Amino acid sequence: MIKWISNLFSSTKIEDNTDCMKKFLIVGLGNIGAEYVNTRHNIGFKIVDFFARKEGINFETVKLGSLAEYKFKGRTFLLLKPNTYMNLSGKAVKYWMTAANIPLENILVITDDLNLSFGTIRIKPKGSDGGHNGLKNINLVLNTQNYTRFRFGISDEFKKGKQVDYVLGDWDDAEKTALPERLELASEIIKSFGTAGLENTMTTFNGK
Image (cartoon, rainbow, N blue to C red; front, side, top):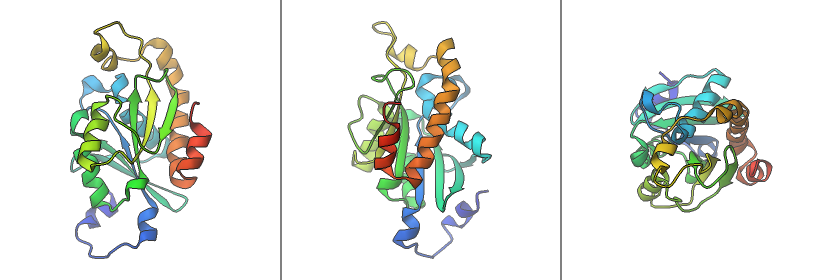
């Protein structure tokens, strides 16, 4: 088990603000279950899974999800995949934000976005849910919209009345070919968020 998890609730040591500011919660949104693995709606899971494989770290089953720990340049990144299903994502985010003592400004939520063309990156420090049920629940549970979200464009190439089928559908062949490069870029964004800061990350990656 990840060492810090085993000590999480038994330790009485109070972290100072410097320690807290060096920890980041990276939340990939998605739905659990084999039928959802390669769907557009699960791009959040896919990005953190790719990052974990690339960096040689493993996810472990924890309360309300799966968690992996990555250390880089003095920072600790906790990658979270909620197992609550998309519509209840806020419960897992709130729990691990509190349990790991991570400030709101150090949370990055990765999600799909129908309003962006495929693979387009949009990083914002706050905003509405945009009709996304995962973000809607996180906003409700955290009682704020002021957390960073990393939106990954999945485009809106579906016929009227077919949005659900499209979002929960598999990537087409062209998208599958382009995904590896986009996932590499997403991995760079995660590291940049924790090391270069939000403003620099937005300047460097937005629109790419």
